[in-house]
Every structure is written in C-alpha cells, then in structure tokens.
Image (tube, rainbow, N blue to C red):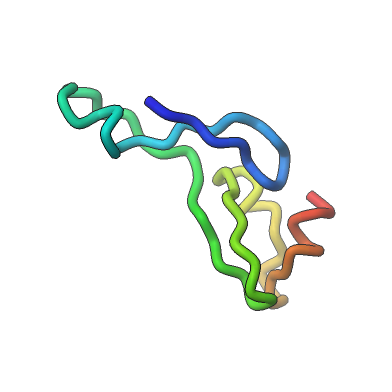
Length: 67
C-alpha cells in the first residue's frame, strides 16, 4: 500500500487502491483525502486533521498551515 504525507500534520497516511492493491485481496482503507480549498489550493489531509478544521468558515491554505 502506498502512503502520502498529510499536509496538515506531516504524518504518513495510507492511500489504498491503485496499482499497489490491484492484484491483492487487501481491504485496507485510505487514511485521508485530497481537498480543493476555496483559495484554489489542493491539500491532502488525514481524517484527524480534517476534524480539526473549523466548521463555520471557508477553509483556505492558511487554516491548514495552522494545524
């Protein structure tokens, strides 16, 4: 399984699927998602960092930098 660093905390996050899991029966799940923010940036965040983002604001790269 591949991994990718979270743009918020820097932790290596598993990324399921793709060629790495093509011929295996692994049922591993992805630990984060790529988000397109309102300022036009793309950020890969783990689910823990996503939970720490404010619910009442439009999220920008500045929010991710403050995690």
